Image 1 (cartoon, helix red, strand yellow):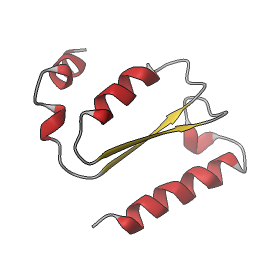
Image 2: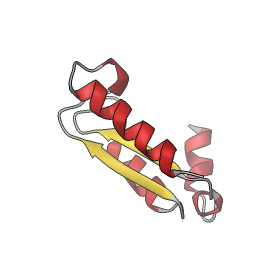
Image 3: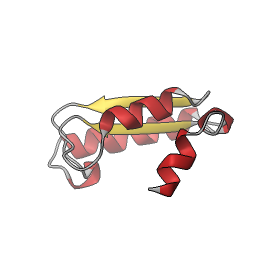
Length: 81
């Protein structure tokens, strides 16, 4: 939890300038999705997208959801320099 507290400190997330895509499962029961969204919103090059119908492990979801997640990741990487 110390890492979470460090990220919450003023200026820390704002200093992360690398492009970042956070894919947040809409049905996650393990992680606080709202906290993830708040953190990414503070990053200058952060993008946060909610994946409807998805649970905690996006890459272990059934098709076609998993393929859609991979497609979104590949699109992000191809657009990122």
